[in-house]
Image (tube, rainbow, N blue to C red; front, top):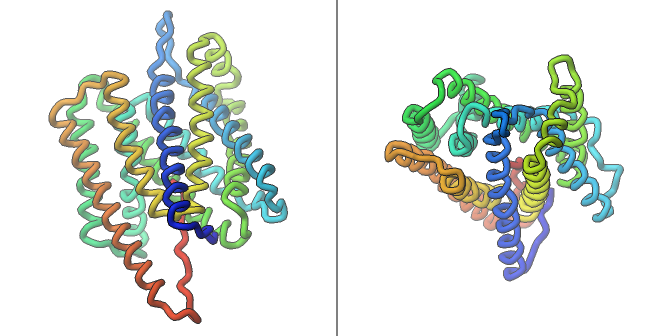
Length: 337
C-alpha cells in the first residue's frame, strides 16, 4: 500500500493524533477487559463467556469498518471477501485465546506475554530452517522468556496448572497472530484493497466463525448474553470494551497505512508499557521486587527489538535515498499488531 506523503508539520501532527488515538483506545480497553474477567456477582459467579465477548467485540469492529469504507467511498470491486477467510479465522482465534487466558493469568502477565511476538516467529523460523537471526534477536527472546518465567514463578496464589494453561493460551494467541500478518500481506498485494476494506472482510469472516462457535454443541448459546443482561455494570463494561477495541483497531489500520510499521511498533510498544502499570495501580496487583525485575527484563527485550527495527529503518531509508531514480526501492511489506 502506498503511504500518503505529508508536509513536515502535518506529518508530525498526524502521527501524534494517531499515537494519542491508540493510547486513548487501548489503555481503557485493557482496564475494561480486566474488569470483565475479574467481575464477581453477589452470588460469587464470575464471567467465563469468552465467545459472547468476542461476538460483541467483532461486531463492533465490523460496524466501524463498514461505516468507514462507506464514508470514504472506497471501490467495492477491490473488496477481498473470498480471500479474507483465513486471516479472519486466525485473528479471531488469537483474540479468543488472549481473552480466555485472563481466566488463568493476570492482565500484567497477558500484556507482558503479548509483547513477546518474536518468540513464536523465531521458533517457526528455526523449525523450518528458513531464517537466520542476529545476536540481538536471540538476546531479546532470552530476556523476554526469562522475564515472563520469573514473573509467573514469583506470582502469589493460583495453581501452577492454571498458570501454565494460561501461558499456553497466550502462546497460541501469538502463533495465530504470526499467521495472520503474512496472509494479510498477500491479500493486500494481490487485491489492491484498502486497509479498511481488509479490516471489514476479516471481521465479517471472524463474525461468522465466532457465531458458529457460539451456537455449536460446545458453545455458550445465549447464556453469556443473559449473564451480561442480568448484571448492568457488566453490560456497561462490555459495551465500552467493544467500542474501545473497534476504535483502537481503526487507529492501528490508519497508522499502518499513513506512517508505516516501524512507527506503529513504537506507538503500540509504549502503549503496552503504560498498560502494565495502569493495571497494577488500578486493580491493586501486588508485585514483588523480583516481579518488577521481571517486568524490566521483558521491557528490556522489547526495547532491543525497537532498537533493531530503528536501525533497519534507518538503513532502508539510506538505501532508498541513495538508489537511482530509475530503480526505485520497493517498499517493505507490513502487518498489523
